[in-house]
Image (cartoon, rainbow, N blue to C red; front, side, top):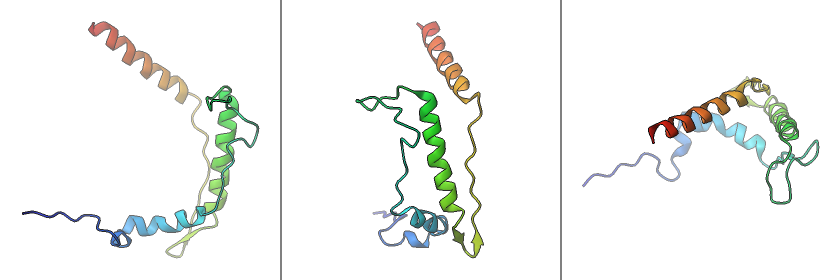
Length: 109
């Protein structure tokens, strides 16, 4: 009989990564991130109807997180956080990957 106990209840505090991340999680307790700071980008069904507005709202939420985490200290060291805008081509890259997957699937048939 073999018992593997990797993450026993109550023992995760001994995981170095988890213990270092705890202050960041603690700082988020009670924080409400606005999903519609610049206005709603969703329709009544919760589907995105304005991608540009969605990106603005997402950026604002990221900036709020960075501001909060910049006030954190982990093991005596100050945290440095900054929201970084995604590259302008990331959406195009995703589209190209999707097209490649579809074309590969069509060619296999």
